[in-house]
Length: 169
Length: 169
Image (cartoon, rainbow over all chains, first blue to last red; front, side):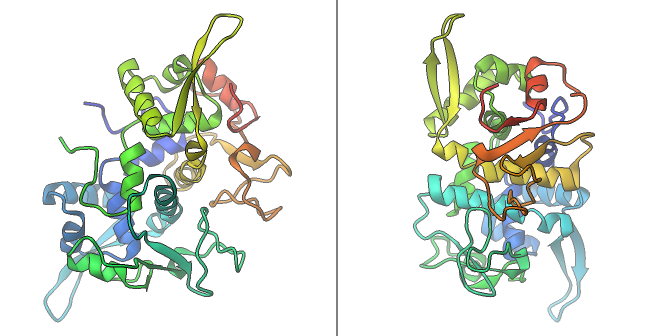
């Protein structure tokens, strides 16, 4: 087995990958940026063993990327995971991965769209709005997924609708 | 063992991670963007088993991210790996990882610097040059690493000097 650290690499890329380079972790963070907050929603959307999901969430909390808290509600209390400021700063990473995949790797029929909430323009490769010449904060980005989702879970249906990033689904 | 694909995820982030989400792969690509081209230079700088490096390079060639070719030289011929257009388009991914690590994860004493070749300004979180208000192509980015490298290999010393990205070391 290869480990999960890069002790010999004196480099901030390696430090980042020590925190979220593990399998599934960047997809958990992708979902968190799209507005997923509950364990069961992550589990339904990602289709991974609950033990793997627990492990990834626990490490992201330990590394200051997510917070874990209990919210009261009419249907009882629920544990929710929310991005910290450091977690929200992962938007350029996730956007760059999405953009590269759409351009070079994708067999995704109807790729997800990212637009600037203010003007509705599509963001470019660097998550920049060319119309307004600004790089919107992640909360000012609207995302949607046109067409019929291939996945039939509730979270996929919710995330397909146009909504602001970070807005709870 | 978890596999290396994300078959259930109809998503371009997942497609990207199927190509370069494996351990070490993004550090190989980082080095390629910094100008590393030879197997022995990757091996010296990354300190990984040669079998792992071979596997990662082979997959990146198979996925159209690197090309492998034999260059003749005065000291005999050498195999070199070079980024394709798709590979060069990974610059926003690697820059975003470097920037996040410097901001949130780093115990790196003297982080690597990325500047716009034309004006010398530091790039921002989105690899944008605020002075010129352009996002330079990767070949128009100069990188350097001030201070004494912690690693003593030749490649680390070369990559510490100011040089254009992609320029062979």
